[in-house]
Length: 107
Image 1 (cartoon, one colour):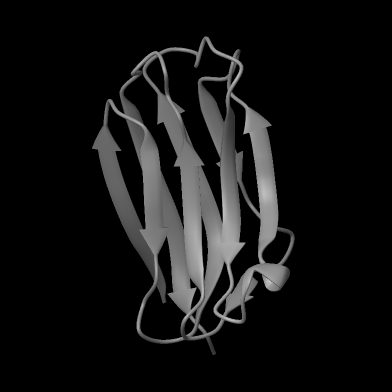
Image 2 (image 1 turned 180 degrees about the vertical axis):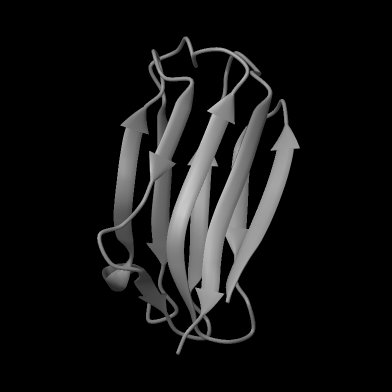
């Protein structure tokens, strides 16, 4: 069953998802109230419980001219207990954002 995690604000995005069970990342959606307007990357990455040598950046997207972003992996990304999904964006222009993460428990 898919689960949805949502947040909205008009500050920097510093989002973390770390359920107490293994999970799969299905999709990340971001909507800004206007294009980012600054050369800053929105980054979606795995902060691995095994250490920094195992951290993986799934997407680094310059949001300067982007208002809507959908990241959908070809196959769901697997996370083990202790791994953290992170989404970060500096958001210098303080655009209001809507962030939605679609995930499910690992089978």
